[in-house]
Length: 599
Image (cartoon, rainbow, N blue to C red; front, top):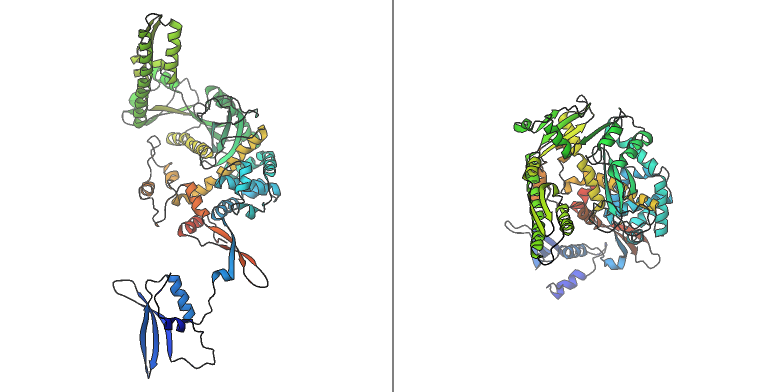
């Protein structure tokens, strides 16, 4: 960049400063900032000359449009400093992303997770901690993990620059052997006598054919033709993960409950807890088994047929909801239980809309079958052929109960079962929560709130399966490695859970949601708080910082780099590290994570 300046002035500027014993110059050159009332200050290069008792100033050049760093360099030169090029002093040998590693490892150490995994430091513990941090930053295969953590400061921070994928697999085996002990420590930290325990089950598809756990079953991921693996997650009332168990893909959800009961009582030493599970988990059979343990409480819900039976028996009067949306009833069919009946009009509207859409889709398929049957006059379709087509159509959307079919050779007619539709519509928006807990320990509204807290386990599943931790696809060949992989992901979610809570002011997450759970109407659908709405519309915090998702915030922290520098001297070369300065967003994130002072 060129700047207009006279040759004589350049010579004068570049002249060396006078020595201490040299006579004082009659003129002096300096830079002065002159304020302007309605515009930015003017930066002027001036020459001052003493004439008698007064000083005469002469403006040599207007530097207002010069870059700030250039003006500062010229000011230092005029002050007599010896300036050298940065490249002549030191060079940057390597630059690696560091901020997100600093945040992840700092949170792991602040939570005491290292000592929870193993009280003494070891190579295996360092590998496990590094894999947890790597899954938070960029989840990938074990081979890719060893490549990825060398492109950041993770390997350097943990002293694992020489680790390979075989060591990672060995560390997984080491972690699995310690799973029971680690889960016991988590339980002692977050559970106690009388605690609420949330439990749910999900599945993930498996890539391969070698693992005995990978079996075809009810796939919740929608991947047809692939074997699956079932795993259950136990959390505390706030959604912190405590334990995980892995089962073959054809395992039914209710059959896993017995293992959790044994874990709570045998492994964790808890006699008095309340297990919360959905209606598909805590079935009549499982509740019957739980009733054999009076100290073990439970909260679940009734299925739709059971709710209909309550109405038909007169135990549930729908007129209860004329002026309220929550009522407690009793029934001789459920001795020793409390039944809390809820009505949500928005849920009723949603179920009604969904039913109409499914009926319309089913009727469209039945119309095509009817047209095909009518068209086949020369070789009419036989009764069993029509039945196969019709069964597939009404089974696809589970609308068989709402359809009447007439099937004969060469004849097919259908109509809606209005009586069945009206009977089901009468219960739209109605659900019944059942519990063994007496009112002295748990009120009816809090019973509903605790059942709805199962959404926190579902959030754990979304995080495990989503872009944050990517538990799937699962490629491990052995049963033990699959179990260790699931448990490693659970520990990573434990760290993310705490990071999300701390970083909530910078995320789109609703900061007031946890507090409002216990004060708002338990039946009405949750509404975002004013602060959450403001963040979503303005995409700015009150401090003017950009609001992020958890993933993009980690990427923003990763922009803070650790630079390895080398001095350029004739005799000896020294190496040292310099970190890029924190941006306001990064500084706020580290403040929220309680990780100051940052090295």
